[in-house]
Amino acid sequence: MAGTNLLTLLDDITTLLDDIATMSKVATKKTAGVLGDDLALNAQQVTGVSAERELPVVWAVAKGSFLNKAILVPAALLISVWLPWLITPLLMMGGLFLCFEGAEKLVEKFIPHSSNDDVSDSENVDLVEYEKQKIKGAIRTDFILSAEIIVITLGTVAGASLLNQALVLSVIAVIMTIGVYGLVAGIVKLDDAGLYLLTQAQQTGNRFKELLGKGLLAAAPRLMAFLAFAGTVAMFLVGGGILVHGISVLHHWQITVAEFGANYLGATGGVIAPLLFDGLLGVLAGAVVVLIHHAVVSMKTKKPAK
Image (cartoon, rainbow, N blue to C red):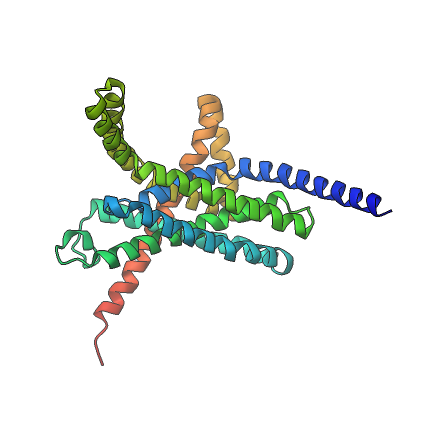
C-alpha cells in the first residue's frame, strides 16, 4: 500500500514537472521579444562605467533584478486573485515611464545642456555616487520590463492552478534574469577578451588569436554603441506597445496600420508597420511626458520663496 502511494506521488510530481516545463516553454516564447529589449536596455545602462567596475555593476544590477522579481512574482499572483483590473493600469504607468526615459535621452543627446548630474565631465566627480546612480537607473528600468515579462507569463498560465502559476512564474523569473545578465556580462567584457587574446598571440605567435583579438577590440565599442541606440529604441517600442495594448482605440488603429502595411508591402510590411506605430506612439507619449515634467520642474524652480 505504501509502495502504491509512493508511485502515485512520483507520478503526480512527474506530471506536475511536465506541465511546468510545457507552460514555461510557451511563456518563454511569448516573452522572447521583451527579453531582447531587456538585454539591449541593460547593456546600454552599464555603459560609461570604468572597465574594472563593469562586472561589479552588472552583478549589482542582477541582484536588484532578482529582488525585483522576488517582489513582482508574489505581487502578480495576489493581484491576479484579488485585483485583476489593476494589472493594465500598472503596465500603462510603466509604459509611460519607459517612453519618458527614452525621450529624456533624446533631449540630452540633441539638445545639450549643462547639468550638475553629468558627473562624468568633472574631475572632482564622486565616482561611487555616479556608479550608484547608474545601478539605480538600471534596476528601475529592469523593474518595468520584469513586470511586463511577469504579466505576459501570468497571461499564459491564467487557467492553471495557483501552484502551477507560482512555479512557472518563478522558473521564468530565474531563467530570464540569469540569461539577460549573463549575456550583458559577456558583452561588456568583449574588449577585455580581445586584449587577452592579443597578449596570448604576442606570446605564442598565433595568427588566429591575433586576428580574433583585434576583431573583438574593434567590435566591442561598435556593439556597445549599437546597444545604446537599440536600448533607446526599445524603450519607445516597449513603452508604446504597452500603451497600444492597454488602450482599445490605439489597438484598433494598430491593427489597421498592420493591415495597410501588409496590403502594400506584403508580409514584411505587416510586421514592420505595427512596430513603427508603437515606436512613433512611444516617441509622442514620451515627448508629452517630458514637456509636462520639465514644465512642473520649471514652475517649482521659479516659485518665489516666501
